[in-house]
Image: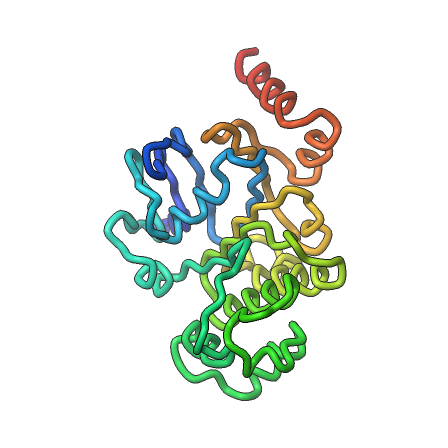
Length: 257
């Protein structure tokens, strides 16, 4: 008797999403297996952030067709907090400030309980949190501090699926290295896929974060649809040389040939 292999961690089927009266996603299909790290490329306005925000359950993103399955469960009727408890976490491109809540308290919320001092010490050492721990979350934080705050919350949560919306946006090179190293540690990027326990989906424009994070496959999201996929570094090089239009046209030619 053979045992069944576990199903994919995330399955997105023919997903259509509107914001207000405008349709942003027009039939997205995406599957992420446990342990895989995927990269999402594409021009501004193509729907990348919309896809991440829809997965996490942000209000204002209306699913008009298709579905999202996480661990085999349809997310349609689940609120943000329920999705988080299932194991979905997100680092926002522009993290919101939370007045009256200290970062230390937010880490306890993310960890669903009290965080031991040795765990705080490890996060502090890895992300250089320092005085940020006793400050209101992201209040007056620099771009690098806000991204390190987001990473600390994800490391406290340890989600099964980690979503990253442009982690290098507004961050200097030193902070990109710190954030990227923490992302790779969370996703166990140095290990073989079969040995990893978490999956990731990373939006990047520049690809700089991939100097620190090992990714398995990249997708181009273009005009609300996934147009092509391939090796992350190869796709980024091709896009840098020829632009997104040429990348999509090349894929279409391959499909038609």
